[in-house]
Image (cartoon, rainbow, N blue to C red; front, side):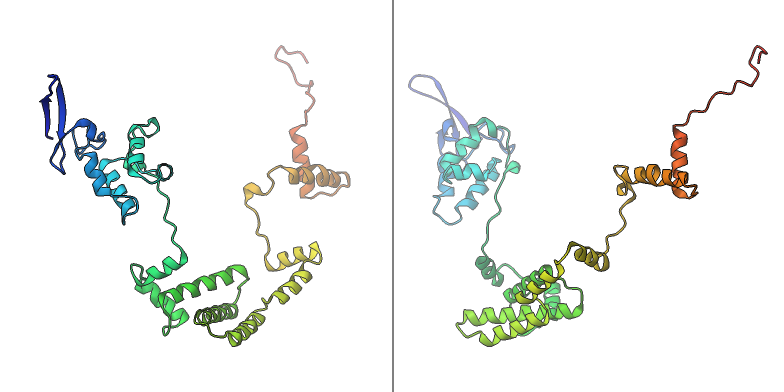
Length: 307
């Protein structure tokens, strides 16, 4: 690094640093504090003016990308919240991360950035550019939805529609899967017709028929719900018949011991009183034996020979 001591008029030594970009000798105050091991000095060897010129103003294209690039080179952190509080201006942000105590020792690897929010329109527009469906996935989509007349955004719309339907309603057969696929197709047709300003009456009638065939019309749902929710016992019966609850894990069968308590001290005691010899009675006897104290036997001979 080019560092020179220049004698001033007052004969005091002033340290100057040569900028690696503009090649000018400048006072050390014209440079930011260095935090990267790439430079051995305590100053980052590109001056503040050159960095500001490189970054540009906040309204220029690629402004935030250049800010992050410079911070990465300087090994300074980028914190989204602090950046926004600094009005997204480099000259206000960099002094904070360079001098405030809460940023001491922070490196670029400690950065916290918000994920960019991409709207649906921006996402769809990007499909024809950088985004492309992998060939294997595209083949599967073509086998499922057809090959002709569909673009990438159409496949995405169809997949979203299909998964919305199968997640909203019970789909336990191949027939229901086919109906949901046809409903998704019809929804795409209606969407395209509306975008082109054409009538959708015929397609809406077909969609209503498909919903009726799937038994998921709003009117049909209301009727089914009112029938099923007539009594709590009806729901329990439905769950036991259609979706039986599996046996719990051994560790969770009787966590608080209430089951064993009833079996031993109620059923076991009752069976013992009535002379019924079964598993409950045996459990009762085993539990009572734990708390039974036998009387000592004094008929045996003691160590001194006395009885």
